[in-house]
Image (cartoon, rainbow, N blue to C red; front, top):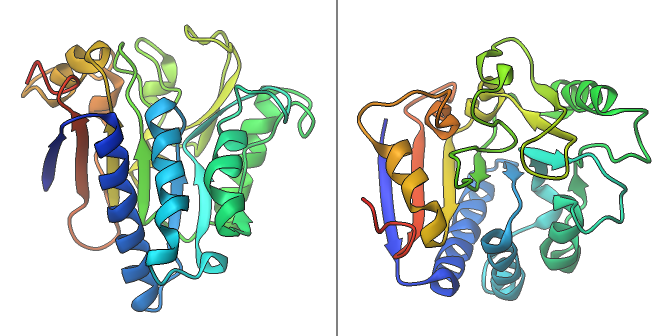
Length: 244
């Protein structure tokens, strides 16, 4: 599987580089007549990326009405909670560019409980998805978690579901919805966006020749598109790459 390692000086330059490459990728896909499906994530470096995409969007020929947005995971909280990944993405990126095809995971206002929220998102992916993502963007936790798939979780071994409810997350808030490995890996490309020395050990473990996915869940990410090899790109600042 092709793997590309991009080590960039700091988080600000990383955000700018990711934004340009994202806009180039989406414009190229639309130039081929495609409607790209993109799975977003959350986190401080991701917020910076979203700001940069919105800032640079006018430099690229992108029809935002023909880009479909999803999430790899979401916090099961109120829709106006600052913990919502979707709230940040809408404020910083999606609303400013005029995105209209946005599939949020359910909040506490939309579903009776987190199990119902996961089931609803699974149904939406099956009904509205394109069969695979063009791009999945992911962060990385200091413990090696990815999306809301945490070390030691039984969800790491699920192979027949699209989304799962996370109850008692080791990182607050405790209830979340996450796509599973099979759903995340149905993509042409995965981009990891990682900043900071606190993530350096997790980066090292994920990229090591050997290791256990139950200890470092990010090792379970391996793009498997319908045609051709998948693309994996790691965007790291110098601090996050310091143990490679």
